Each structure stands twice: as structure tokens, then as C-alpha cells.
Length: 243
Ligand SMILES: [Zn+2]
Image (cartoon, rainbow, N blue to C red):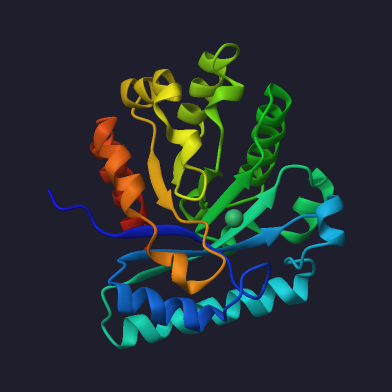
């Protein structure tokens, strides 16, 4: 089967990207991308001092409105591009800050970056549990993924805990073409487990300008190499249900 062109990780001027949301969307149309998520940064760690990010309720509202307008444009013009509202949450942020500013049901995709330890797993698990307790209906809950996740942090210790966590919470692994070392063969054991446990996988170029929006071939090749095409298809079926 010919897999659709998918890029679920793109930054704009709302954080450290260089383009407007609508410019990214137009470029994606030009490139024939079928699934696109805008995923600007969210953090109150030390990074918030040096990086533009989605740091207020008002700004998040503007961001979501701009994506909504593009979504309407795509639907009204029958474009073959599905656009998703995403956000990339820095796990060094405080839980209270995340809970105060992010209403998960307003997003279709939430990426977490810097999951590196068992404590990080516990942090995400608590957050999702609390979110899910406050949300109804549950079908509005976003898809959750790990941005540029490095499996080698768990390869020799905690791999089973990690896999169980991904499975229990239906969390996807992102093949991020900006960090190809994370899906290299040295992490093959991890990818075997993804296959074995039907863990969802996705693709993102982590683009900060529209030129790198098309860097999705390498992830496709590696998904095939690890025999994870059916995992990607499962993920795409989840995306389709978001519309
Ligand atoms: Zn990113």
C-alpha cells in the first residue's frame, strides 16, 4: 500500500519557527502532504527565558484560532490535506503550569519532549490521568506522542516499563528526521518491541522553516526497514477518527 505523506511536527512564529501558520499550510499543500500538525513549543523551564513559546492563555487562543481558520479553508476548498492542532510540551515544565494553561481537549495532538527517565514516565502518566479525569467525553482526548525520543535511555534498563507505558496510554513514537540517530539500528531492540506490542508510530520533520517540511522520506524508509508499516497505518486510522 502507498502510505500517505505525513508530517506531524512543525513550528511557526508562535514559537521558534520562521513562518506563519498559513505559510506552512500552503507549503504543505504545494508538497502534497496529506497529514500535517502544527506543534509549537510550550515550556516554563529555563528555556522559556530564551525561546518564544505559547506562554499565555491568550496566545494559545490566538494560535488555535489561526489553525482553525486554516482547517476551515482546507475543508471548504476540498483539499487533500488534514491539519491538526498540536503542541509540543517540554517535560521540564511544572505540572501545575501545564494544567493551568493547557486544556487537552482543544488539541488533536500533544507531543512531549525530553522523556528520558522513569520519573519522566511517572510525570506524563500522572498528567494524562488527571487530564482524563477532568475530560468528558473521552473521545475528545488528543493523541499523545513522544517528540524526538531517544530510546537508548531505556534500552538497558526500564525498556519493559517504557513499552507497557506506551501501550497502556496509546502513545506514539515519532520518527523525527531532525534526529535520525534515535531511529538508527543501534536501537533496533526498541523497534522490535514496538512491532511486537503494536505501538503506534508517526512521522515528523520538526521543521522550523517551510523548506524542511518535506524531510519525511528518511522516516518512511526506516519505518519500512523495521517492518512498522502496519503500526503507522493504525496511527493513521486514529488520525482519521479525529475528523
Ligand atoms: Zn519540535
